[in-house]
Amino acid sequence: MLLRSKAVSNESKHLQDAENQQDPTPRGSLSRFATAGSPPASPSPTAEVDEQSTTHGRVRVDVRGVHRPFMRGILVHSLTEQGYSFEDAYAVSQEVWRQVRERELVTKKELRELVAEFSRTSAFGDFESRNPILGDQLEVLGKDGRWPFSQDRLRKSLLAAGLDPRLAFEVVVEIERDLRIRGDRQVTRDTIRSVASGILERRFGMASVRRYHQWRVFQNEGDRPLILLLGGTSGVGKSSLALEVARRLAIGRVMSTDSIRDVMRIMVSDDLVPTLHVSSFEAHSRLVSEVSEGLDPVVEGFLEQSRTVSVGVRAVIERAIAEGTNTAIDGVSLVPGLFDLSEWQDRAHVFFLLAADEDRESLQGHLMARAEGPGARASDRYMQNFKEIFRIQEDLLERAEMCRVPVVDVQDLESAAQQVVSYVVDQLGIRYAAEAPGPS
Image (tube, rainbow, N blue to C red; front, top):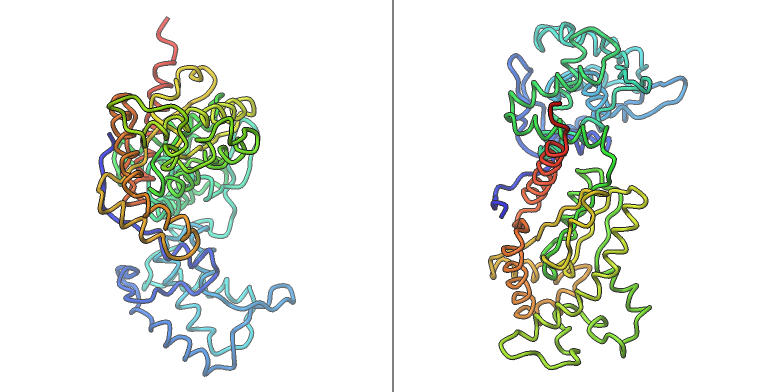
């Protein structure tokens, strides 16, 4: 069973600002940006807005005759892509802003000169020695040609190594900066891996290095698709978890057993399979046969429905294998023991995990929180049938233990996603090691 983690981590606010092309100034203390020799923290966002309103208007940048608003967030993002740390990029952009904020128009050439000037000042340290080819595009050399260095591609590999998004962004910037220090505009994949491995080991340990390499092997040499099955009771949050994991593992297709069940309902009549036409926690009310003594009717109705839906799930898996498409399937109908994963082991990497909130009060509170906004109607039904939902979860947990299916605690989505990603990539490494040819 995967260990719970209550630590809450949030994606970098600064990265969001840069991506949204907004002012990167946070809504609070700027102490997190402070570096040795840096200038004092800038005024609050409100003060900056008032300050700008007293000038001739918004500063605009002349780009080949087209006038565009000057935005510090864009400048910060551009500088980080060219090898600056976020803190350095933010500090330089602030100084540039102070120089041009009284002007109506500034040219792109003038902005470059200001960046170069402030990069050389002692207040920020020797930027030029850390960014010897600032402005030049790094190129990656490979067997199949060359292409521009991509921060996004590298960040995705780091997410697969188990890093949270904020740390992944920081490491990408550090990797690119170290590559630029070498002074070569063209770098090989092996060089990138070597630099990344050194930084990962120094900051996070060998486990992250191992996952990074394992994921790169899967991406570059894998000949079988990755298929993730994520079960869990109604309303526990498995769909949100599946989407987050899919984002980190570059899984292009995400499906729910609810969608599969809806399609099957059109094909199979209510008279033929009545349990298919109600929710999982209501299936016991549509059982045709009597439940054997000692068995729980709620669980037996749920299992009968799941066996029916499993036919559609198998069809989706077979389709994904035929297409070679990485796929995540989530849903209550994914029951431990209902699928024999070994039947696909030669054609795909199929992993089964169970999402759960084993704390009764926590699960109930989660369902109550969903009773507001979109999906409120479904949440009301969840609350009315909470006892049945919790009984189904208890049965799923028992089956997971018997079948050795890992259980991930979903109380903290960020932590849960990292656990799932780490588990999947670790298992890929184990499989590759087991399949590697031995010494002759």
